[in-house]
Image (cartoon, rainbow over all chains, first blue to last red; front, side, top):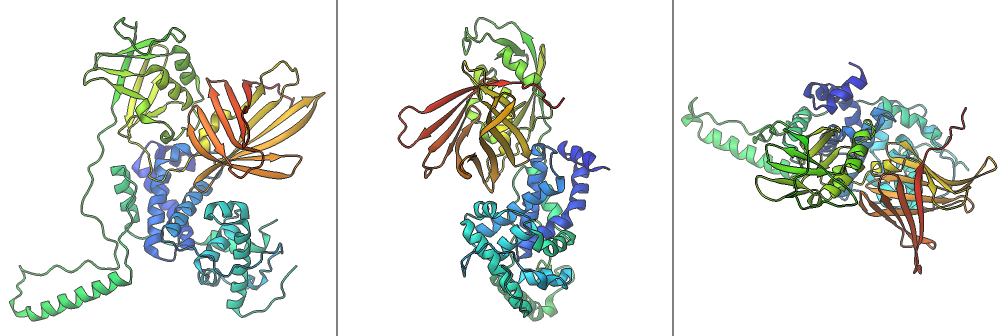
Length: 177
Length: 359
C-alpha cells in the first residue's frame, strides 16, 4: 500500500489503514517523543494524543510537504505541551549569547546510543532548545515563540547545551569564533 | 548551512526508532471510537510505586496469614502488574453511523418569513423528514459547489456554532440562510452544529445532501493557517490607478502562507512589503516585513471569524492592528489601525487573475 493510499484510507476512517500507518510510523514518532520527555508515560501520552490528532486532523494535511514531517511536527508540539504542563522547562544558567559557530567535533566519534545518552543527560530546558534547533531544524525565533522565551534565551540555552555536552565528555576544545 | 555543525546529532536522531508501549494503539482506538481526546495515562511516579509496594507487601502478608484457609475457588486475583499499562474497563460505545439528509429543491413557500432578503433571493430546499424548508442563496451555493475539491477543510472551531442552526421546534428545521451559506462558501463544505457534530454539504443545482459525522474538535485547538487559504491568489487594490498595487499570497507549507505587495511599473516589479501568515506553536502570526527597513513586525491573531481576522501587536510603533475583512468571495478590506489613528487606513482589494508571465 502506498503512502497516498494509506492517507486516503485514514481519511475515510478505515481502521486497518490507521493501524498500518501507526505500525509504520509509531517507532519513529515514539523516539521523537522520547527525545523530549524523560518519562515513558509522558512520551506515551504524547504519542497517543499525537496520533489521535493525526487521524482526526488528516483532512488538514494538504500534501504539500512531507507527511512524515507533518506528523513529526504534531508529535513535537504534543511533547512541548506536556513539558509545559509539567512545568519542566526551566532555563537556568543564562549566558550571554554570541553569534558563534558551534564546535561539535566532540561528537564525531560517538555512536548513536552514546549521542542519545549524552543529550538525554542535559537539563530539560537546554535539551529542549538543543533538540528543536539541532535536530528538528527550527530557527531561534521559532523556538522563542514555541517556548515563550526570548530569542536570546534560545541562543544562550543552545550554547549552554553544547558546553555541557563537551563537559560531560571531559574533552576540551577551544571555543570557535 | 546554519545547522551543519549538528548534522551528526540530527542524523543520529533520524535513525532512531523505539518500540512504543504495548497499550498505546488500544488507547488511540478507544479515543477514536469515543471521539474524545485521550486522557493521560496513569502515572507511575515514586509515590505510586511506593504505595504499590506497600499494597503488595500487605497482600503478601495477608496471603501468607490466610494461606491455610485459601481454596482454589477463593483464589485472590493478583494486583495489576505495574509494568503494564492499565486499560480502563469502561468501553465507550461506538458512535452511531453517520446519517444523511436529502433535500430536494422546491419553490419557497410564502409562509417562510425569515431570512428572505430582496437583495439576496433565496432558493428553497425541502426535506420531507422535517416537513420544513431550508433556504439558500443560489450564488453562494454556486460558490460552495464550485469551490476546489482539494481545498483544505478549515477547522470547524472557527465557526460560531450557535449562528449556524436555528431549530425552531422538533419537526421544522430552518437554517439562517445568509449566515449558513456564508459559512459554507467560506469553508468549502463543512460546518458544525452546537453538539459538535460536523455536517458536510454536498450540493448541486437541484439537490443537496447533508451528512453528519463525528467532530474533530480538540480542547486546545490552535488557530490554523488554513483559515486564510481564501487569501491565496492575487488581489488588486481598488482605485483608478492603472498601476494599482497587487497583493499576492501563496501557500509555503502546511504552517505558513507568504505574501507580498508590489507595483508593476514598466514591467519591473517593485515590492513594497512582504508578509507571512505563520503558525508558530499555538499561535498564528501576521508577520510584516518592510523591505526598506529590514525589519519584521509580528502581529498575533487576536480574534477570528470567517469574515474578519484581527491581528495585533500592542508594542508596534506603526500599526498596532491589522484587520482583514472579507467581503463575499472576491473582495476584502484591509485596515491598519495605529495607536493614535482616528481614521484608520482602509484599503479595498478585489481578486484578480494575473497574466501568466512565464510563457
